[in-house]
Image (cartoon, rainbow, N blue to C red):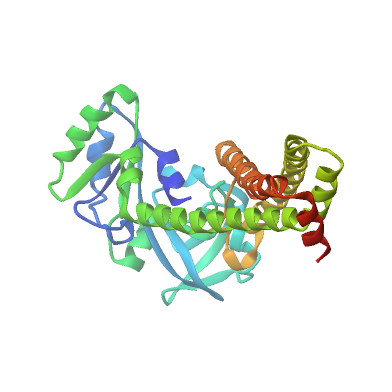
Length: 317
């Protein structure tokens, strides 16, 4: 969500050079005036990002921004903040009932409530960048620039880069791809989800194998009646497809419902959300079918080659 917040708001991001995290970045906000004078620039804004306890909440994202960026936050009620005021994200509005809140031992009046479509923001507090500067003792965490034309972005980056030797200028797209924190989160999520997925597939294979093994007597009777191994395999193939597809459909619906409910959980403050892309859904469906078929057809193939009398006796025992 943080990467979406950066990418959807502009084409170029300016941070302090060599900094590992935007929360620690500090650049001179006066660069905005020089940047806005460039012909290639459509608009720009500066932002300070931080975190602090707010009211009864142990940690809340704090976003201090210039007035030009306020329209990004769609007001549900109230007005945009003036000096000494803040607006609350819709995800924490119900948890903060006071008209004034304390942030880092400073009192702020709540002037409104906003939505932005990004849970990371809707679980936070927005204020004027001057107030955020006093809170976090910095000028700006980063500056976002919107270019008039994507064809001029490379030239625009070069012009901005020479304005200050202590800044790093990148496209928002490349920044998100190279940002260490995003890489760590993405890689960690990939490892955890992959382990869970493999364990799930192993479970599917084991269950199907147990089901087939419990039907040895049935296979033995079918063989004794003259049914071929191909007939048994064909029927089991169809059964496995039906059972696996039904189970997948149920799991998909349940997962979608859970993912829809997660952002509304007050405890998470809107910082956690998720979705199932068509590619992932298709990949999981195909993998599930293949592993279910493997777990069902291999034991059934072995059973179909076994003497019918032995199968019946094993089933009875």
